[in-house]
Amino acid sequence: MANALYPKFKQFLLAILSTGTVKAQLVDSAAYTYNAAHEFLSDIPVGARIGTAVTLTTKTVTDGVFDADNVSVTGLTSAPTIEALALYIDTGVEGTSRLVAYIDSATGLPVAAGATQVDATWDNGTNRIFRL
Image (cartoon, rainbow, N blue to C red; front, side, top):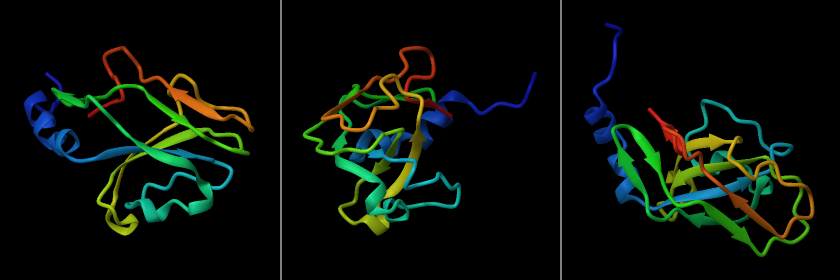
């Protein structure tokens, strides 16, 4: 048997995502590079954030797998190429809004420059948005 975390412990660790306000922010990777040391939304420059972040709805955490409804960001104007989404727990303050995940492989990404709407579809397989 290989080492493993118990699925119910993973679910316990991710419980904050089901109760907190989790948002998805579009990111221009030409203006931001993922860095494992980044901790808060304030670590992503304002110029790299495209459009207004959207709140994830119908969030679920099951045995260490996080999922929610797909996201749609509308009302974009003169958007650059959009390559990624950053998920974060919104506290209302950028310096305390904890980064959760950087996703550049959702269906619908990347989006060509000039788009007025971005529709990102999460994986419907076993990993959903992400799995611990």
